[in-house]
Image 1 (cartoon, rainbow, N blue to C red):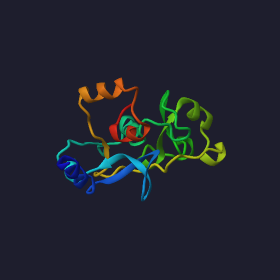
Image 2: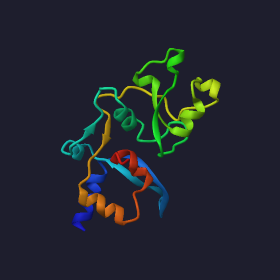
Image 3: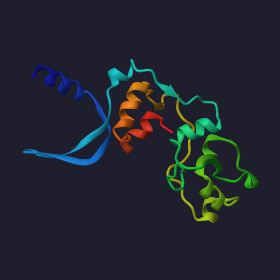
Length: 161
């Protein structure tokens, strides 16, 4: 009983970043199950991997969580200029997104409006405080893989490709 109270005390000081789609029922109501918690005191001691301010293909992929910003695919990823170079687009954080080869080819040298395509989120330069991933040990990763994959809600926080 003591351990449970201690655990609940710590959880009450956590921020819920993501929820699972499932709920649990209790006499006082129905609640979504937290999937990802941020515990400020714990994060101070966990080593964080950050995006460096240097603009590179790797850092664009990290910022966009290795996901096509047009269709959410994780296959055959490339870098796309939102405003094509031929129309004055430059190599800068706000003009570069991760795109799968299919979407990049479909868009070609057109603008988003001309290609009738939309971005999932507006590209922007990362802040110094943006956490890309909290590294896990190899043992933890092996345990998670044995359990038939990771919950989708965790992926962006683990930096898994």
